[in-house]
Length: 170
Image: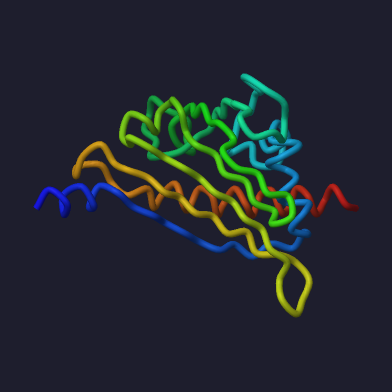
């Protein structure tokens, strides 16, 4: 029985987002220029600062300021200001893959662990790419919701980054 309870706290969510830019260019935004994500999606990401290490290196720690969740009269119209301190756990440039582990911040109030992997692959038989988001987590209790709204946040952010990178090419 304990196994059932423990396993119900552990979860994975995944989604694919079609984007128009190349896989390498989208991937590079998170590896080399995460501090530019706020320019691409100001309604989602307010800031990304280097806390420890070097951009694009495994072990690097970054702090994201973002807006997510339901708003009320006392918060931003688009959601609640939040913070996530994350470490780059894995980086595979040949696969356009990056993995972040959340170390501290608002997500850690509801989750024991939270890992975000982004892998971008060229679209088969056409232009553009597919950004695959994989969220792996363990909730602190049954009362905590699965992070479906955060997955949608990733989708919306991907679309904003795609548009930003497309205008950057012009």
